[in-house]
Image (cartoon, rainbow, N blue to C red; front, side, top):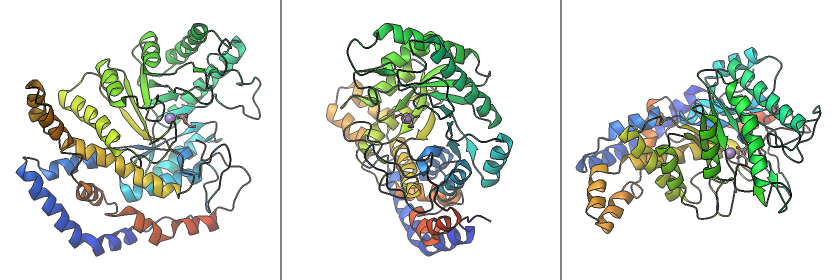
Length: 430
Ligand code: PSV
Ligand code: MN
């Protein structure tokens, strides 16, 4: 029997800090009430907020220089599911996980779906992988996949995406996320428009095969592994593609996939306006696609993004239904701790953005009172909403303070015994 954190441990840990938490929640509630905010309503919204965990995120990541695996790493998708379920058990924020194929391939998907159900988690978007060659693969993706100059390679990449949809249907998923590494390293290596045309041709076949209730998420990335040009480089290219592909295609925003200093929240605003925002891959960065823990470097940026999301939801923006997911690499921390902390940081930005007085902000904007508008905007960010997040978790049966409970449980040492190290694991790629 594989180890799971006993519910009693969560109850005992909560009981020890319940009185202090109640005091903090009440004090914050009184403070917010003075500004006309009902703390319970905010806690209810936070409790209803759901975020997916990437199955590849629960393994230790690495750089192109080295990877330093930790004890008890997941050896395959069934182990990864256990770790994803543990993150949800303690945080109550991550009811789904997002699988990546062929990394998470199994012979029996009914068994996989049942295992996930028994662990209390489901599946979010399925991710295809045409950025690596697999041992049994006929043609190489060295020079591209869905936009390759040879039709046979493009067909192979399309077939893989169709297989991902088939698997996703068995897992009750509703979306396919496509990120391609296609691009060029040398000016002149490829014709910048021809490759885009080939991409569109391939994606049109994939989009046409989506089940009625499905969407396809196009993920752009400015560079890496191609360092001169990437085929789907930015939100403009992504939106152009989505519009060409029709109503099932949406643009996914990975926070690390932009030029330095780009105003990501404005991109989010524009995609919402176009009715094409697929959702997010949350992470944080200082220099590029660093894949650092969400909220660890620039929580204010995350807050600014959530301001756009709360604004869109308050306005009832047409077609606004974003999918939220983490996508980060944990090289020096326990991935479970990082993913729990990151899920809580996403919730924090959401709760803070809910505190903005939108009517007052609009009035200050209309009156061109710049300082007042900025102060109203920032009011949520400077509020410590931790008691709200803790209360949302407690109400859902989670831990008031997840990381100490996780450490007390010694989950990792249990897994180290249950999961003898394997030579090669599909976890933790960045
Ligand atoms: C690419 O950098 C990316 O953000 C895509 O989402 C991939 O599927 C993921 O990372 C995993 O490597
Ligand atoms: Mn991503």
